[in-house]
Amino acid sequence: MKWGESKRDFDTILAVWPSYEPLLGIWQMEELAVGKTGAPKWRDRRVPTPSGGVKLDIFSDVDAAFTAAASTNARYASELRLSSIQEELRRSLQLKASKALQAKERLRSEEIQMLAEARRRKSGTPVPQASNLKLTEKAEPFRQPLAAALAEFPYVTGARVGQLHERIAMGKSYDGTWDVLANGSLHKRGAMLIERSKIASGFDLNPTKHWGEVKAKIRQMLLPRANQLLQLSSVRRLLDEALARGERVLVGNGVVFWYEENGQVGWHVKTTNNGQSEDGTTLWTEGTILSTNHGRLVILPFIKENGEQVKGHTRNAPNDGRAKPRHPSQYVEIPFKMLSGDLMIGLFGELPYE
Image (tube, rainbow, N blue to C red; front, side):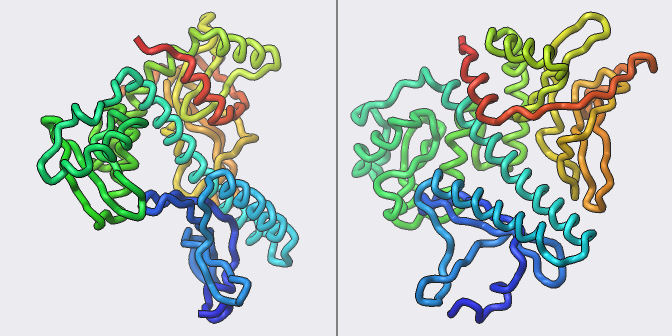
């Protein structure tokens, strides 16, 4: 097929994002496309070749992929800003693009932090020697490749062995015996489950379960760790400097540092609504949070797709009971500041494990 022979080649592209493809070990660019009808949707990105053909937009290096995405997104944002479409439509498309990219970035940042925590939790797991591995008879030829695969992630329950193009996968049973799951026939879902095992197995969870539920359990497991952040001198310094600038709410990777003046509480930790914005909304970074209670969950300000700006608020999580109300004289409405995901990952990395 030649470039320009498909209707999709003429769709408006709002943004791009690199998505990791574990089966092939590549980063494949996706694009947020909007046609003449319907809402914007993510799809595989196709680009023209020098000869006028069509190919997928693929990268072998993660840094190159995200550098290209940042440059491309800046170009698309500029084109949309300068386009001759109606202002209402322009604003709607800008909000949808912002919402979609925020969701992608939240997901990536969260899983990077979860992987880092998984590896720290299992840092004491010894790397198995090839001679000590329990294997089925069928798996015996892969003893050395399996040992090599487990050198980096010794705690996982599934592993790729050999070269990626060989599509060989092995799994560990409950009694600790490894067997061959796929010999040249590994499929996309199998590769994805093995990749998820790097996170899930670090928390002793099953990567084959519903991934959203697995990550919800991990978030709950990380809450005590988040509270320990207040004990770090680097965090205390960060918060002291923020307070000196008049900043009383800092948000990063689902963790909220909240300064409570009433009752001389000072800084304490709350959480966001799992880092997810409401359906059809975009995070409103210039918005404020109106707190009329002492709920431990912070719903961040957001902008609806129709442009309506909604203030944030506090409440308790489901099953926590009703949040203790504030006296009207103690209602607070304050702005918030976003912390980078890399900073939060670094702060969690400073916490010692017993």
